[in-house]
Image (cartoon, rainbow, N blue to C red; front, side):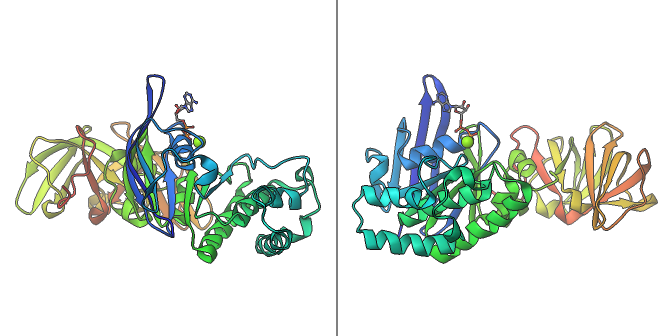
Length: 365
Ligand SMILES: Nc1ncnc2c1ncn2[C@@H]1O[C@H](COP(=O)(O)OP(=O)(O)O)[C@@H](O)[C@H]1O
Ligand SMILES: [Mg+2]
């Protein structure tokens, strides 16, 4: 059992405020991903939870106990780093046993644990090798194994897959997720890769510049991004945005007009907006399709196309110069330089205030 609660946690380096007040509850057994752009404070926050970095303000609780002043070694956590941090002069077996020997675990118990964990992580054939004689993926498995044998209450991962090639990253993603299902521990996983976040997390905390912009289940965040930043960060390729103004409101609908005079009617029940309000319309590439004549909402010129066989992408610009990406499932005959009409799926449109950047979805407070 390990629930983790952060209350108004802050960190400054000198007068630079790197973490600016984070409140977060990670429930026991949850796989929680901290995702955000490079430099937003993910590693700093994880290191504060681990005890490697003292906190400037706020409290960190593990299982109802404030751990602010408890040293890293006594918090019952284990951390896995991007850089593996294996001891180069030790064999895999010694790397795995080292932490247990330090706390005087009986030898037979160490051997049994290494046996079990190395088989689970498929490194049982590699136990007598040195880290330099392993591939990147094997090294990362050893690093994970070293955390697992310690039986921590919480696992902390800091971008553990960033040094691996794309294919291996996908495999390891699945393996870490199944490790979580098997062990059932609370895990906190830091990444800048929103695909990793979407595929692995029970809950995602989207961070930017030292604050949590949104916390929730992956699809909750994807379907209802709280603001423009989250909308643009979660989802690949990223959401399209069109700046404009609400020019007319009615009981049932309102009219959006873009800065380049593209005009749409949207359902008023879905949004809290007022006439004259400056807004940004958001719509995902997969909710945008090529359309002709009266079916088109606006026209674009296609800058480039990508045909992947099973799916295609159009990269285009509106008359006003706004970039719009279109995702087409299957293949397309649209060519570079073409002028085409686009239609947006109305029920999937997001509206954000240009001033506050917040979602104007009805029913939010
Ligand atoms: N020891 C430190 N001293 C000063 N600034 C630091 C220190 N560690 C991190 N920072 C700064 O804090 C910010 C967040 O860093 P970090 O937590 O590593 O971000 P992330 O892991 O999200 O890429 C960065 O601007 C970084 O330069
Ligand atoms: Mg980092």
